[in-house]
Amino acid sequence: MEEGHRRSMKKTKRAPGSIRAQVAAMPIRYRSSGAMEVLLVTSRTTQRWIVPKGWPIKGLTPAEAAAREAYEEAGVVGQITSEPIGRYTYWKRMSDHFVLCEATLFRLDVERQFETWPEQGQRESRWFSLDDAANLVDEPELATAMRMLQVAVAA
Image (cartoon, rainbow, N blue to C red):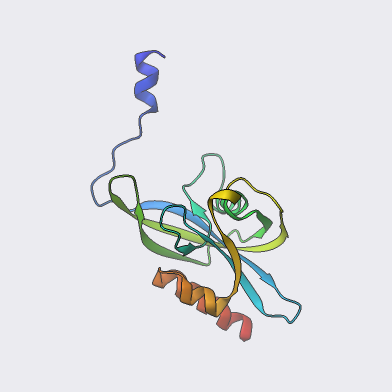
């Protein structure tokens, strides 16, 4: 590989303390009783319950990138909102440090859940009531978004 090409592939340095952007999907479905459920997955390193999320993907809108993360991490596809339903911040564990991230959250109305998917062996996934899911996630702003969705559904 020539030197100039290798240099162009390096990631740009960010200012210390800068917030990194991520995209996230909140996969939801309705039970036959009409109750809304949200699909949570475990993070790969800490096994915390989270919603599917990841880095923006060049060539995809933020909503499309969030939908792709939902497929890769949880094996679900469906209709994703084009407008975010919220944002939340969290500390992401990297190999040797933490970075502050702000995830833009999109609602994904799940139409299909596959039996196999790319990260199936790396994570656990489970459907929860909105209330239980809000109590399980560590990020207060994500829990608030879930509770607000629950209030909107009840209204």
